Length: 508
Image 1 (cartoon, rainbow, N blue to C red):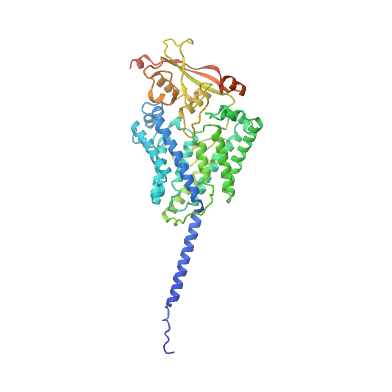
Image 2: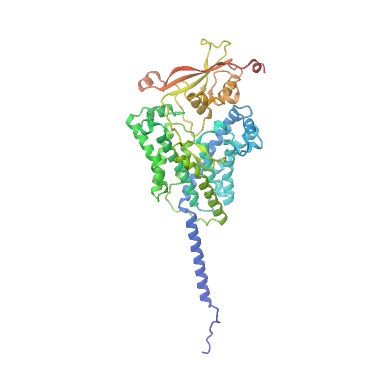
């Protein structure tokens, strides 16, 4: 027909090409959206933000604790010197920057750098960096704190050290404002929280019978390592309420953790119950940053209301890295899980030198009686009972019966905690107690900074130091009104006889 052109065979017209192009774009967009929905959870962007800032705050406290205490505990002239440790323990067993070099100045630089980076993360610097830059920034405090923990010896042998390292490692892969939170990492954070709570619940049920009888809190608030300002009041709560506390704790630690893996809003409710329980523990005692870090983990499982911002799809390299880390964590979880379900379950153990996946738990047994080691010094040449014995005062542990306990957590008073263990058994004090006494006899400046008060002027150290064991108990309401003292103490026995420096040390 004249005037009509037919398209050449095999060639589509302009309209058909446009339609085909639009269809391809739609398919690509759909595929990209499907990939995003599988790998990321944009609705948890605020949960990630809150968790990251809370974790940065805990990091800041941990590094501040290290910066202010390391010289007396681990320094070149400390009670357990790092240089001596790294000579005896190879790098493979305890990876640390201090295997490459150690000096007190370098250790201070590591601790204060950790403080600075933690403060930067708390202020949100990672959000201003590209994705890879934010990940590297989160890697810095983890590597620095690992270096400290792995040479910290008994001063760092606490479960919350490994918990901070495991949490900090997962935070490296949580991303920043350039990508939505990865579902896999959010799941791993819940898996960690599950092990913290469920492991603690199991160790209680398998341990002291008072947990099964619901009577442990009749003693715990009085005998815990470091009571807080409200612990006296918690101790004097009615017995039935103590039993209700224990029963609620069992539910929170043995039942609620499974709900973390349920659909929303059930997972949010489970996390909220854990947060309430942890806040109750914060009020009742001083447990360093254990409770606050557990709260941070629970916040990562909370789905906050509000519409998420528009976030781009995750780059392929990021997906590969996250999935590889997830596979590693699953592989390393085998031994902690076997330990957790074992009848011989142990608390707070690391199964790899990087503290990537650990086992947790606390208070498998509860002391019925509180003992305290009281250290005294005298300037007299003859250390008899009629000598002028003066008591050293610690910052957190009970001493003067009239001195009310203070709130220190999340800050960690390491020496005070170890003094509690020393009172349980001299075996816990074997590697450091003698070094502490020696430094008190020298009026060592760094050691005295760990104390609340020394009874001796800086230029007049004591001639002798001794330690005595006392039994402490909370006073009753009537005794508190009559004496103003929250503690009553009774002498038990000599813990360390009067000790002085050798003559060679005195001359030097």
